[in-house]
Amino acid sequence: MTQPKQFRASKGTRDILPPDSALWNWFEQTAREVFGTYGFGDIRTPIFEETQLFARSIGTDTDVVSKEMFTFQDPLAPEELVRKVVERGFDATKVHVAGGQAPKAIWDALSEFEWLTLRPEATASVCRAYIEHGMHVLPGNVKLYYVGPMFRRERPQKGRYRQFYQIGAEVLGQSDAPAIDAELLEMLMVFFKRVGLTRTTLYVNSIGDKNCRPQYVELLRHELLQVKDQLGPDSRRRIETNPLRVLDSKLPHEQAIIAKLPRISDHLCAECREHFARLKDELKLRGIAYEENWRLVRGLDYYTRTTFELIAEGLGSQNAVCGGGRYDGLIELLAGPPTKGIGFAIGSDRAILSIRESGDLPRLPGLDVFVAWMGLSTYAAAVAIARKLRESGVSVELPGEEMKFKKSLNLADKLGARYALIIGSDEVASGTFTLKRLADADQKKLSEYELLEYLESEKRGTRG
Ligand code: HAM
Image 1 (cartoon, rainbow, N blue to C red):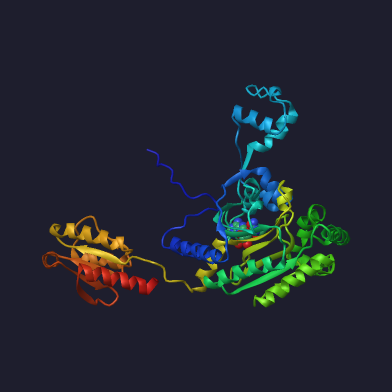
Image 2 (cartoon, rainbow, N blue to C red):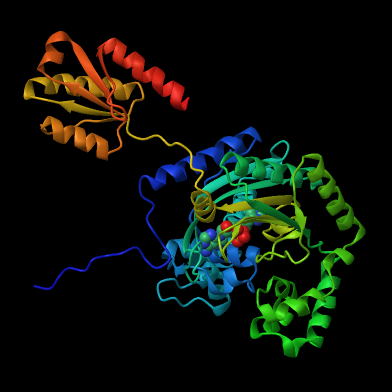
């Protein structure tokens, strides 16, 4: 008989198991708490969207869109096709759905609906949702955060996965005041401090806007053409497609060449220069340490003005734990009303890796009580007290089969329980329980009331 196939998680994906998942939950929960104090609300967008949404937002020449998207086709049902045709202003009577005989123009227009992509990031989705739900009419700035998996078909390595997790935040509204950028960065730093990720450097830059960047990009292209022969194939290609991205090159032999290129900071228009200067003042006001990095251009096309990244020590080449920036024109690019936007996304996989490597881990909830019941006559009492303890928030393990006392305590130890609750016939007869602290074998005889009081108050004290 042939052996059945054993399955493994796909390349670049992995399982997050207990107790590791408790660290993840704590990390994400801390973000929710901190972001809540800054007035952010949770947004949950779909895991997949129309491919065009990402292509248009992130840019077709970016690595993410051109090489890394998980895209699949969703053949439309005939009635759906007709609906889309009419929505698009075409004459539905011209579509012979059953035979797929629609004129080419209609097919081309429709084909974009058919392609779906697993989200490689969530800023595009948040903007789509903002427009779709008319959120521009909401008072003040709309502040949203999200927590969830993203998908990029990358070459997996430490800190780089095909399914990875982000915690992101976006601020959308009418104002582009530098105070918004600074407050967002303050929130980010408060969060990183709360989770103990402090060996980080915040890099900031301004990449100008539609008024000044095009001239700078042309200047850069011109300068790059002079040194074209000394550049590698990627940078050479980018001279045409996206010269800014050459600044991002990590190739050792290109570094000296890049160092001599013109810097965007010398070519910002007056408004962008003023915006960047005020941002830096705001960061100082808030005591946020940062370094300027004129080469920080980011790998997604939607950015204007402020860009930033947080780099963590000790992570090797995949050391960016957070990236973000302004994207003032993006909502309009997606056919929404004129809106300003800024946001960031934290790479949870890398951030948690970094916290783990620093060794400064929080004390996370584990098993409180293992119920060691002995003899079938004690089982009913064991079931009852287990339920009562659980109702008061104590975590309890109750073996479903009778075990020898020694084996019971052994298992309690291995499961990392703090206490063994011993229930023998004596205890049942006297209506008491024996609570044994496993760390030092300290033992107490307690009534049910005392037991609940004791464990509840201890829990409040240790974790409250
Ligand atoms: P991003 O720089 O592409 O920005 O990703 C943000 C963070 O996600 C990175 O700094 C990194 O920590 C993590 N990350 C990216 N790709 C991977 C991967 N393959 N494996 C593990 N971690 C990864 C964005 O996604 C923007 N949407 C951020 C943003 C929000 N900008 C404005 N608003």
